[in-house]
Amino acid sequence: MKNYSFFEVGRFEHLTQYVFEGAAIPFAIPGKVFLKEKLALTGMEISFNTLPAGQAVPFIHRHRQHEEAYLFLSGQGEFQVDGEIFPIQQGTVVRVAPMGERVFRNTGDTDLIWIVVQAMNGSMNTETIEDGEAVKKPIRWS
Ligand code: ZN
Image (cartoon, helix red, strand yellow):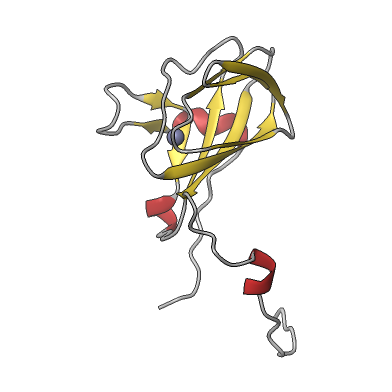
């Protein structure tokens, strides 16, 4: 069994080719692709997402056990958690605790593009830097 998997999400302007349909919500979400199954992830969920100019996420949601980090790659908008509103733009990273009631919207004139990383709240019980270790092998590229 290989120690890796990979998947090409494709160019960000083509993210609208993906449409998410899940049991948890009664409607399809265009521009969203989850990677947990595509990559056989075991400790996190990752999604790539896009929302066109002028559009808003049409529902508020929260989680039972998972925290989420939203990594905004392009565009600008407003994010709301528990009724508090703050601006987001390329480079903004937002962490939301499981029970945070969240929603956001694109207030710019370009696509809002972001990645969500979702993981079990409280599951990182070691320092991530300490978890890595150097492998003493020569590096070869061919
Ligand atoms: Zn979520």
